[in-house]
Image 1 (spheres, rainbow over the protein chains, first blue to last red):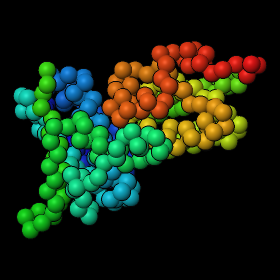
Image 2 (image 1 turned 90 degrees about the horizontal axis):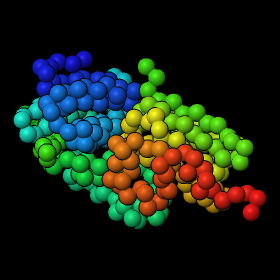
Image 3 (image 1 turned 120 degrees about the horizontal axis):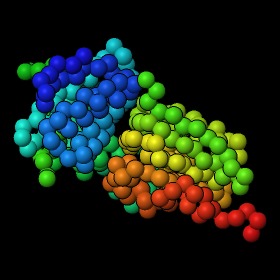
Image 4 (image 1 turned 120 degrees about the vertical axis):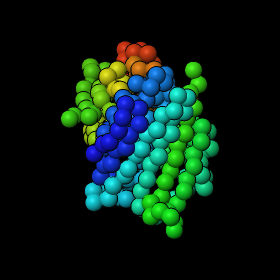
Amino acid sequence: MTSDDSHNGTINVPATTDHLHEIREFLRARIRAAGFSEFEENGIVLAVDEACSNLIRHAYHNDPTQSVEVSLAIDPDVVTVSISDTATPFDPNSAQVPDMPTYLQERRNGGLGILIMRRVMDMIDYVPCGPTSNRNMLVLTKRRTA
Amino acid sequence: MNQFTAVTQQDERGICCIDLAGYLDAHTATELESIMNTAITNGCSRIVVNFADLEYISSAGLGVFMVFIESVRSDGGDIKLAAMKPKVFTVFDLLGFPVLFEIYPTVEEAKQAFPSLDA
C-alpha cells in the first residue's frame, strides 16, 4: 500500500522478506525523479534495504501479521527515509559494528547491515516508542553530494 | 515476479559456473545458498560466479559467499567472482570484500585463473 506525491510518500508492507523489493522500487522511482545521482540512489536504497531486512528478520521474525512502514521525504538537497515499527526497540546507533579486516580474516557472516547504513548515510536517528507514540522510528538522512 | 535466478553448469575442466540474474537480497539469498550447497556437496570446489545479469546485491547476498569460502578453499578450490556491474561491485568494495575474493572482469578470465588440473 502506498500514498504519495511525485517525490514523497509512504509504503506499508507485511514484515516478510519477499516484500523488500517493493520497498526498493518505491524508493528508486522517487529518488531518481528528484534528480539524485544513480550512485546516491543505489546507496540510499541499499541502506534502507539493510535496515528493513534487519527489522523483518531479527525483530519480526518474518511475521506476515506485522508490518513495516517506510516514508520518504525529499527536499531539494536532502533525502530523509523514516522506517517505523512496533517491535521491541533497538537503536542501531548503540550496536557494535565489525572491524572489517578482522571480519574477513575470520570468515564471519552476517551483521553487516548497520555498518552499511553508517557508511552510506550521513545521519542515523532513532526514536524509540514512548508516551507520545507507540511506534519506533528510525530516520536515515542523506545529503546530495553532486 | 521472478526476482532472482541462479543456474549452475559445469565445463569440461570441472569448473562450476553459477550464472546469477536479478536481485540478491535477504529474501533470495537463501536460494543461492541452497544452490551453492548443492554444487559443493556434489563435489564442485572450483566455482566461478557470473554476476553479469545481477542487478542488485545486499549484505545477505555477500554473506552467502562467506558461508562457503573456507570449506571450498580447504578442498583446494576457490570461489572466483566475475563480470560484476559497477553498482554491484560498489557493494563488495564498500565492505572490503575484494581483499578476500578474487574478482575478474569476465567469466573466461576467472576460469583461466584456476590452475590446470593436469599440472
